[in-house]
Length: 280
Image (cartoon, rainbow, N blue to C red; front, side, top):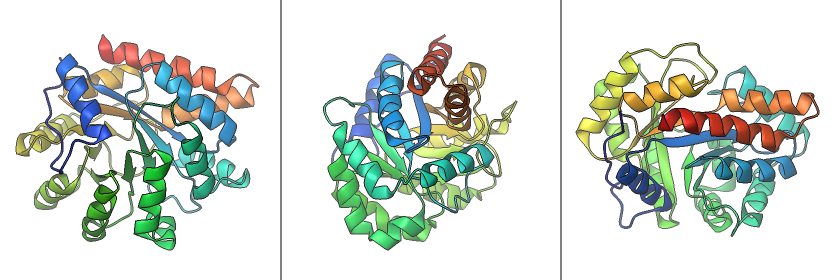
């Protein structure tokens, strides 16, 4: 089953994320959206991995900026953030890395960060710097909706989509409000709790996908818990416009690094497997 078409999010002009989802909708394809932690194990590997993911079927990429207190992340991504921080990774070096890939990296990149570093830098300054580096959007999982509604127009002024999250436990009224405020796509968390690989996805997520998509044309992407091609296909068959794969990929990369293998190549192979699964 192919995901139904989605219209661009409600903003003055189609953004890079809008355009990518519109193109995929025309093809009847579900977006593959891998997540990796910048700086794990180092920024050079991150750069190579971003390009490898692009070459192996990623349609958008979520790039984590390491933070010392990542409340939404499970143990796999927390460990990756800790390794990146020990390696000296900072928000500034992540943006420098992204800027250095201009011309080579055409896949829209969504930065995943937490509210503390964003607010410390200043919303306006951070958004300007992120856009200048080539980012297409932002995800800030611990930012309350009321603060997100302040940040969204600031981000939009720089051409960035602020992507908001909803969970199965979000009350219906608030879920509708979040979905209406989200730009680029709405990030539907498939489970309660933190990120991490799960063996199964609950069927109620499919109902939530349809509920969200019935309200407007904003694309819906499902994340948290997708561990392989089978679950990615399940998300696609529920009608989601995108499948976000984080912990499983971060684990593949960590294992490759520990074994002395080419981390970017290992990430690329895993991404290719996911893409083939989504297109089956």
